[in-house]
Length: 370
Image 1 (cartoon, rainbow, N blue to C red):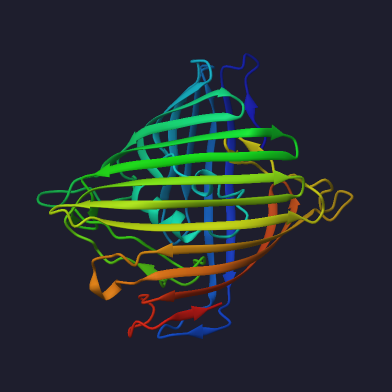
Image 2: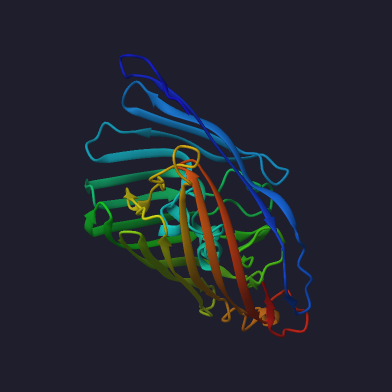
């Protein structure tokens, strides 16, 4: 959308928004759970952003999807300190590549399962204060102190209070050029005063199998109680070589429990994409940026076409909840993306997923589907 600004550069205002509509069909169902076909508005966001008094940035955005209204971003930034941005409000806590990347620019319709499960536990959008430092264009360091998301129910009386924690991420591109990038990164977080719903000192990790049309979780640790704190560490890497992109992440989450019965969980994904029309995927600020077709649809061309393939795995087998012990989930996703222009695209994903002792099967056998 057009930016409205005064001639002095002190103030600017820009509307922003995104609509993402999904339709899903389950071709095969194996196990004790019947997946539901259907449609949904995955995202329906509307907001605005801009500058105020030259050194301040602001953003406010609300999501109207899922028959609910939720704040996504609502923050203020101070930018006068050289190479540094200070942020306060609700925004994305530093985490991994796929999580901190804009949902508008991700290659697949849904992020990897471990990214969602571990990100929901200690990252994603939260209220807090953070700082980002970029001494060079190819180096980015971010960290912050965060509470919970604005949408949670705050405690009252004997209910558990809000959790808190610190998050950090550092990225480096040793090769940083147009059409050729090597990206490396590390991230981590620590959280205390945990809760799961109204249960204090508790954590629950879960995710659906790379689709949001149906609500069934293929991975679920159950509610793990007596958790004193948790911490996470992850690594990420990506390479862009002209139209070819390869990327992957891996992470491990540790639960420190009262009494010393500690647990750990892990996950990873890796994917490869290729732009059939020759475009290259750009990097900006340690994240992937917008694909811009060489020839846009309706403007002398057909847009840009991309094919992609991903393997994704989440291991919750160490959960102390006996009903879910041994729970693992994996998937293979093939994708075709058609970019009409820099701001509109059509995505097709085929996902083959399977899991052991998942909550989708009441007798604990292997569950499969596509």
